[in-house]
Image (cartoon, rainbow, N blue to C red; front, side):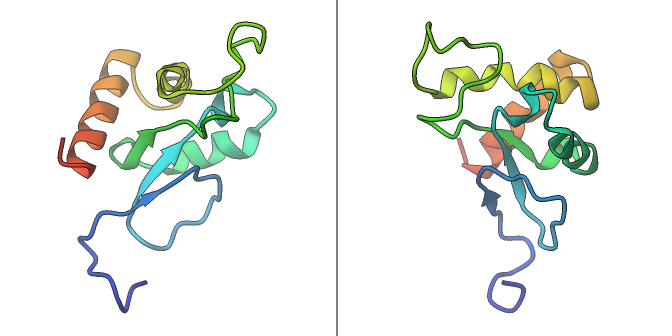
Length: 111
């Protein structure tokens, strides 16, 4: 990719879970950090600058821990808000984290 894509080209890595990242990109975090047993996700989250994170779902399959399947059988974009407080626990207060995540998404997708 380094040979073919300029370094300032924005890339969104969907459903990112790997700890190594060798190309500048935005990282999409799903509901993985809402599960306390996924310590690898927490380590990755600590390494990624907040300015490179966007929140996403892996709809329709991956529900956040806080959402019982009896209430919602399928993930949708509105459920991504459950991930924001988990990111904020590692990064910044919720209000600042949410503002930065919104700005990241707006810039990445020219919204």
